[in-house]
Length: 139
Image (tube, rainbow, N blue to C red; front, side, top):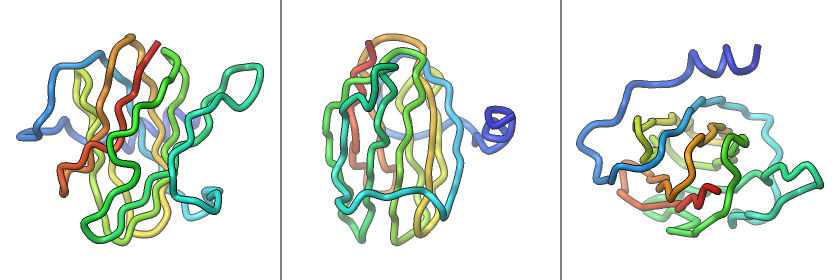
């Protein structure tokens, strides 16, 4: 049911964004004021348990500054990728995959989740600033 609700939040494909053809991704956006946040806004990319689940990656958008900035993170094909975002404004995150995905971020705290089904490098960009937040190394 969560996937069905999240699928309703997916927005139209990006246009005019600087990107390259990348492996395909499925995307869903879920905003939540109740997302759990670690004390630091830095990205984490370690596996959390023996099942290999990906730790949430923390993203901070403040003024013109976006963190992390181009960090490469290893993820597994088909596993959910969760971004916990704290932002001082509404934003769009673009997942440069085929098809390209746009994820809406609210002002305050938001959580966006998506999966990538094809191995390769997939960039995640904050559209307004053009900053590449992450390079997902999908294996």
